[in-house]
Length: 229
Ligand code: M1P
Image 1 (cartoon, rainbow, N blue to C red):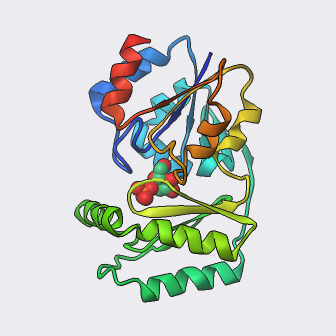
Image 2 (image 1 turned 30 degrees about the vertical axis):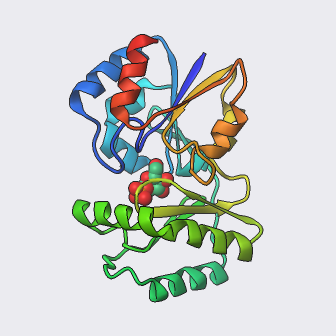
């Protein structure tokens, strides 16, 4: 069995560092197992969050929704994508018209193969991040942005990854694309496996045996489950 873990919300709190005791446990757990990581974030952020030891202990790490692949720190492939100018204009108009009062900066982040967009901005503090997340739960702002983009750009797919942002990429260039690089059955752990979430497309392809999907609420639940495996 291959084990694939999402990072934010599954192995760490969103955009935060891995818990030190969970890290020790996880390093031991992955010994002699075929383990891969997948994130919407880029490789440097994954390294910052889980550390080099974990990234080098797993078989491979897929980043920016599988548009980049690293094995033990070595870049294996990358698929670039420049979003069209019309899309950038639309994101800028969302920013201008959102009634959310805090705009902390770094709202449109171009990554390899995708664009990450956030109304509150990636430069927000942890407090601002949590506050936006609460606002979004109540107002469903990200779900509305997602719907509008997908209606206006049929070749583009949008998913809601972590707490404050949406991930935007060409249709099909979502996390499910990593399957072709992994031989054999896959047990996938993710926190956003519901429709619209950024683990959904991968989870959908793995829903029947011999594959398996486990949806978790947070890293604590992941740890409890791994202890029993
Ligand atoms: O990996 C999950 C998500 O983590 C971050 O989301 P947010 O900043 O909204 O909590 C982003 O890196 C996002 O791209 C990614 O999908």
